[in-house]
Figure 1 (tube, rainbow, N blue to C red):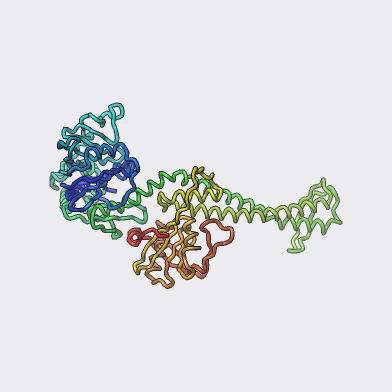
Figure 2: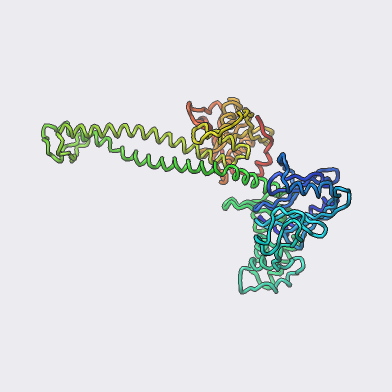
Length: 568
């Protein structure tokens, strides 16, 4: 995830279109995010500034955010000093991940004032600071006191100091031959030496320079450096890449040779970042709100898996019941030759013709020994019947929690309460107290539209799955589910969909499954009339027949392109 100095440089260049625009509104939809609504060329543009420890960035966004009813104090300060102001400049400091936005506005009595917003993109140390024309700090999102930071103080009223310098060099001030003074070929790891020497470089770009030639020498390194630096100044060709083997994802403002052919191109840097960070931001919010739920489901899943293993071991112990019955029969058949005090009986097994030796309790009579083995047989038979029932129930619980675990990987913040409520109804967690009875809201299904224009509906939790399969869909509609994997119910609202629509629905079903990160996932599909919910089955559980199978490899960007709106 290379939002490095070079990416920042490209982004700042692209944001120059906002210069002379008026800041119409400032919101703080999330704790670490400021959203400026900038009016420019008769259009509103949303400028997002985030200092999230993992997702710090700046770019234009088209995503809609929900704003808190009461704006946080930080947003109020920004509104007071910046709303209605004109953006006079947006600049990058050196080649670092620091961006300054100069704003000219009016104070309470109408006098012109100048303010500067400073965004420092530094991972967990990222910060957003507002200063006046003398660079005195008006407010900072993260306050740093002399006791907590020995390098600088970020508090209202203090003079702004830049983060400690790393003593790196601006790569745009050097030609290929000039960089040799910073490289020791005997030390190896040329990419790491470049990273340590030049400001704004990320491991992604230094590895790209080194990968341009088979061997790094005093001749090939300058060539590769100049080649890559020349491409940096070319028009942007934003790309997103995902390695399906490792699951690692990367993006950059230009195509890189280290990315294979499995890349997705975007029209702009802003569209790329919206795509890249939106899913991650949603997952982070879900993880924050549902962390306890995820742990609970994992614990319950582990509990039932352990229980299943123990039940299987016990079931193995009941396999001797037939032997116990045989011993009882043989003792009864040979009781005439036994007397109390005998320790064993050697008898012929009339089923196999083999001799068997049966242990006897010398303190019991022959009839009592026979009754003992008959009782053992009946006890094991009863236990086996109960174990078979318990194994079935435990297996159902394992499937249920595997399904819940899969759903938690794809839910949105709005779906969390539905899963909590379902687990409470099933008796796995305690029902939360509600002072007011919650109004039953309409079930909303995720909706996609196939290339041929057919509607494809997806249930992302068990309530949605049951509603979609048993109420919303018609008997002639086509139903999809991954074969042998927990996953969502997917339905095409068409009696005779095309092969392309079937392939797209299968891909969506594969994506919303436990195997969603794999390739060539088997997906079964059949008509709704062949899908049945057994009596007393847990939410989301169905059986089906008359199915066909397609193999699908999820493609996130294709799925997003098909995404439509939510449907009731």
